[in-house]
Each structure stands twice: as structure tokens, then as C-alpha cells.
Image (cartoon, rainbow, N blue to C red; front, side):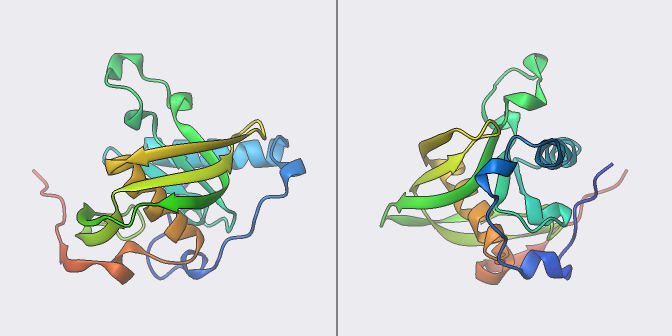
Length: 169
């Protein structure tokens, strides 16, 4: 069981290290990816997670299968996407304030100014390079997760930050 580290953990404030390309297909890196997917999968409201959020300072983030499927019956956590050594290669000048929260800043939400469109170049879990453009929520996720890899939390940038704990019972 992999725990998600919370604000205050020093790993969240480090600039994560690049993954050597020769390490991508190794059992140890594949195990990290599996731990990230498991941690993300346990969170009903999570759509992505970066390696620093499980205490590992590597430039990796995973986007949940929830972002790519409409049918929960077709549930398969491996349908998510892995981004290793991601680089934001392009982002639109047009920005908007978007609601955000974070699995490492639990129950706090705020608005962050993000580019409406973003393009990322990265490597997948097989070590193959790819480029992906996105708009809306996926573009927001790219920017949020790359911030994590640079030691930045959304709460550092957010306006109208407020705590909204879950209602029990």
C-alpha cells in the first residue's frame, strides 16, 4: 500500500531528477509506476499523480484511466497514461482561472491561472517518446503535475484558497 505524502514533506519541494532512459523498462522503475497507479486508484477524486507525491523524487507523472474512459464498467487502471521526463513544449498565451485541488494538499481548493492549451513531450512506460497536446482539464493536469516535478504546489499559486473537508455521515 502506497501512501500519498502531504504538504510539509520535503520531497514535494525538491526539483525531481530525470529518469535515465535505460532505467525506464527496469523492474524497479516499473514497480514505482505500479505504486503510483495504485495510490492514484485509491483516491476517488484523483485524476493524476506525480512521483514526488509518493515520496520519490523522479520526473514522472501518471494520468488516471478516468480521464480516458467514460465507462466505469471498462475499468482498467493500466488504461491511464504514463509521462516520464515530461517537458512542457508549448502552452497557449490564453489563460484562465481554473479550480484545483491536490492529493498532497488534502481538502484545500483554489483557483489557479493556467494556459488553456498545453503540449507535453515525454516517454511512456516502454521508453518510447511521444508528444501530446491537450486543452481544458488535461492541459491543466499537465501544468499541475509538471509544477509538482519542479517542487511547486498548486497552493503556492492559488487564489481564493479554501478548505473544504469531506462531510462524514
